[in-house]
Image (cartoon, rainbow, N blue to C red):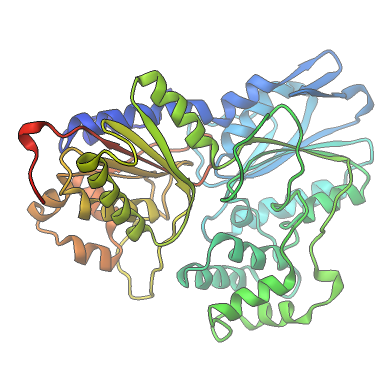
Length: 471
């Protein structure tokens, strides 16, 4: 399977050799972290035993097996589980961001939910899952496949709050620049499904739950052993560490009390004990984590070594304004090529995390944080011969676009000018996605089978003696 669909266009201009290095690494990386491949390698049925990693379940003691899921990598995860279980699976319901022709399920119904903002289809999926849980028996087994984006893709607000109110609140929070932890604190506390509510509901019926998850939480450490269950928090199927006070504080911290729907303000300020999310769950909920955010960089180091290129991880915690992060990496490229520090060229530099872009209501462009980071890089990369950077959302769609992100190099600044555009105007209008698509610098993948937030890879070639100059 080839992940990058428009590689020919991407390497038709600019610093071609540097771009080729980056795109080759990205291809290897996506194959390595694709959830479909990982699940098929760690999960199988042998006789009456369901084996996942180093644990097993006696299926003869289970009456029905149900599957539910949501997230940007849910397509691949659900397909893998569906193939492993075969006729043992009674029913499944999932909510995905993008449905593709290659998706195939036997007993799973797929809805196309909304992301980053919820939609009616995601709410339909949530209601069907709730009904499936309410009809289950203590001898039943649930398997959930959850990845980043599940909070938006699977939405069912509590009574008294409409879907339109939830959409409005999330749009306001996103535009204000709130980070994902802050937004999730609000999402979880106004939902019947998020913040551990689904797991709580399953355990109230006496049934057991196995959760398979791709974690997109910035700040996690690299995964030690995906074959061993771990303690986990957040998402629809794990205890929630945020509180209702956190949710209300988020709204206050961004001075949004006059913009958030009244139904949500009234609910969150009620502070009743019955509206707090679950903080603990018993041992009948088992979590397997396939990947954490730093694992993209860990895999990239190994791939670079196989390619014979020196490499380093700069950070697995990168956050902040996307454009500014791109400018910083452009400056870092200049330091590497000129002074051979913190690593000597030729080299790769990797980082992961989740940068954000604050967008006001007057913004007219399109794109996502990856596009803006790549374009910010282009501002500084013009001073570093051959330097290139790709910034992608690992799940395959950046922001509201159909592209995974963008790739820019030392020639992109001049290419934009030759196209009659002003890079500063483009960034002010937040039209990085539109311009990179026009130039042939937007990376197209479709669903990739993973969701490890942002992955950024910079390649810096060595500077030939005849090219050296004093800046």
